[in-house]
Image (cartoon, rainbow, N blue to C red; front, side, top):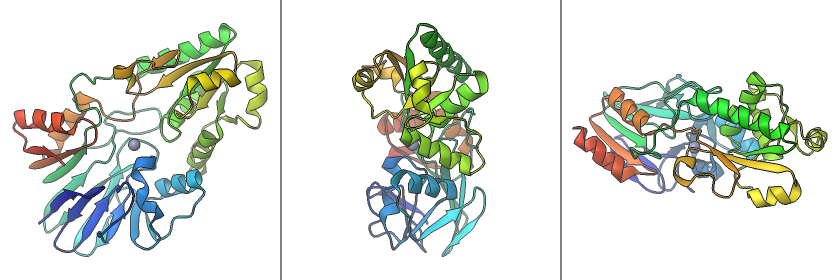
Length: 326
Ligand SMILES: [Zn+2]
């Protein structure tokens, strides 16, 4: 028996245990927690000092680097290695979303439960796509769960970003890109490293995440804004990565020649907002990928969370798959 409910995170109750997945703030009455990846809206459980937290070693390292806090009572997990929790067997697999991100498989008495967490069903320059897992009960994230969310081919977007940066430099301006420090920033760093000779200058928050990835054997080349990056910015012969929390107007006050682009899947809906340009590049699955992924997992029951959970559950039902938003 596996029961699924919502209590500021996904609660999975089996006969032997109660586990909470990606709680927003605290573990509550659950015995322990699973943290799927290092984006801030998923890491609330790390602040609990007493209860056990399961996560990948990469996610724990990213969280500690970002917050400069030590996580206590965490079980540092490796992809694919089974773990025992009372009568359940747990396994974390790569979810393809960001560095260290994981999906959780739980099996108890022959029933398989699968929690995707945030995931990507396509290869990127830095992550391998998630692999479908056959399961009985599935909790799937549906951030882009409407049919209008269809992302362009990744290689085309990569080309457009590189062309945009090169043209901006040729025009005598400074290309600045707003991107999430965990995930997109590594993908963009790798893009410019692989296909151009344009140096990548990183805001300190991105320097932290890039250096954590390199500490695990990554090969990202970048220059911190507050150190060697300063000279590169003066020469206007580099591309700068800033977190999405920066407002383009603020950046332009500091760097008069900045041309600012935002890189996110949401550009499909919201366009460039206050930036000069926007590129549709996401670390999530788009609608077709979500549908293809769920079908490949052959679940008997699906719970949808995040984004367009109700819309996507309705689409699944129309295709004969039992589904409801959580
Ligand atoms: Zn995420």
